[in-house]
Length: 245
Image (tube, rainbow, N blue to C red; front, side):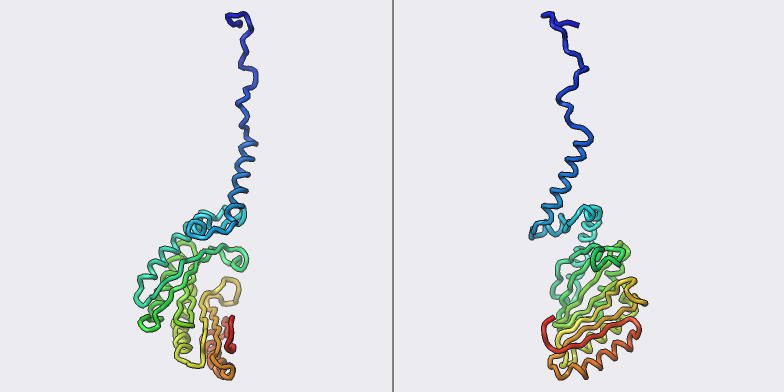
């Protein structure tokens, strides 16, 4: 075929210069965007945007759990707001969600945590511990492990979904420590770790510090005897003198 000027017309058989976007190049662009996303997300970015949207992405493997982490953060935030409305609560800390790597690798689900600061005058540790336990059960049904820390002055009680069978005893020990002037800071934990102990659902941990060094031996023996009586097999008890840590 010729043009009106007699020159042969170019056919469509010649490869078009616009056809530069190929499958391998698309793949390369996608990989580049992923790398850029990871690099940007690893930089410190304070504020809600970084905490919630980026969800601490630290590698390509974490991108798989990104959506799950985002949903779990929303769930934990809803539960924290609910806890803020409980009677006897002063304030609630913003929740955090961790993956299952590192120290949490023995867990099958992600771990959400937040702290409830209890009014020492008007708050009932027993009632709040029961509510925290109910929240942990609800979170477990949604596929996330929830650890709620109740803080009463210098004494804390950590409640998780496995706390049920020892919850009442743990509350009694918290009250015992608070009423004993020999003790200062203390932490009672019912947050067990599956496969870490022979009877993980009964794991009971108590760490306390006395106000005076001279009280460590006797006060510590009394407290640890109480803890051992509650759960002889899977329990830890440590009492030290005054100091940091």
